[in-house]
Amino acid sequence: MWFLALGLLGLALKYLEVGMVAGWSWWIVLSPFAMAVAWWAWADSSGYTKRKVIEREERRKQDRIDRQKTNMGMKTSNGQRPRR
Image (cartoon, rainbow, N blue to C red; front, top):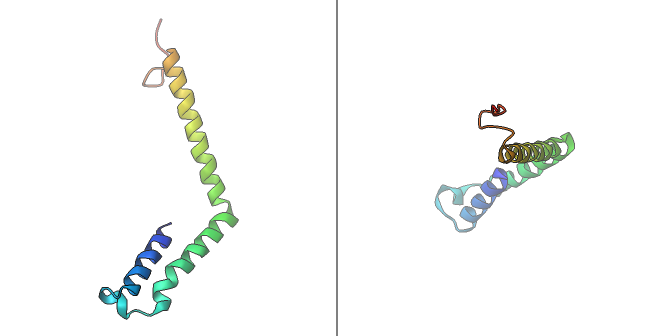
């Protein structure tokens, strides 16, 4: 995502001829888009994206379980069961 934002910023600066970016070659200005495509291709082919989605879902699931246990009085803030 950062490559895409950097590419859009560079494209805008080049088009509007702002600062030193105006003198740069178009290849340099457009290279972040190529890097974004390469990153997405690697992330999808290696399973990185899927692993991150699964980790996020597991974290949300565990937070929900912890919150429900706390609301039922089965778990205190330090993770211990309350004394009776």
